[in-house]
Image (cartoon, rainbow, N blue to C red; front, side):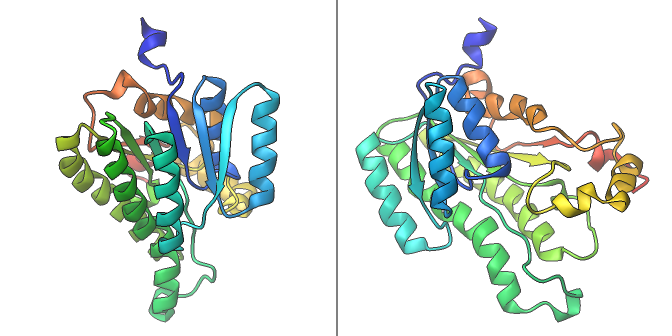
Length: 260
């Protein structure tokens, strides 16, 4: 009964930012569990590698080269895809970025703001709405999962726009959950703590970073990718059929540490 409750077998799951990092891991584990994956990202070569890897393991996957900030092109491609697939069951809004240049907050430009917000927030709004329309059209009781971050709840110097965008992701999740509930579509978010990605790799691997993690995380270490699987399977499956508008922090206790 428990295995069936968390099953994603034969579910159609679209993942943005799927060519590397956490998005790639989500694609791998969900495909292994029997889902059909639609892996989306800008880097076609990396997508091709992921598709081949999953197919070699007898998994079901297709790819879609997609720049989430090219809003017109994204709508055209997703509309065509959803018409062919007759909608999808789960959307994982995973694509994200951080500021290309770190500046003092007083020197941050509107271009800096737009670069981060277009990827981390505006695209999430845009793709969620496109997806929800097709979930509704094909009477799918769907699930949308937005990837936030502990940066949403912790003010750390040097990266304010990223933190603001991730706070906004949680607010967006709540608002969309209220609106989409009428169509039997759930919307939740996951806020990972310190998991090594392309964005934070240099910090996490540095001596200063290791000291920071040991000091500020109650469990005393960074997270391992496998430790995010419980949250992904919860929100991708019927195990969360009565959960919507929530944000699940997977962070080793980082946000509850008052000593930070």
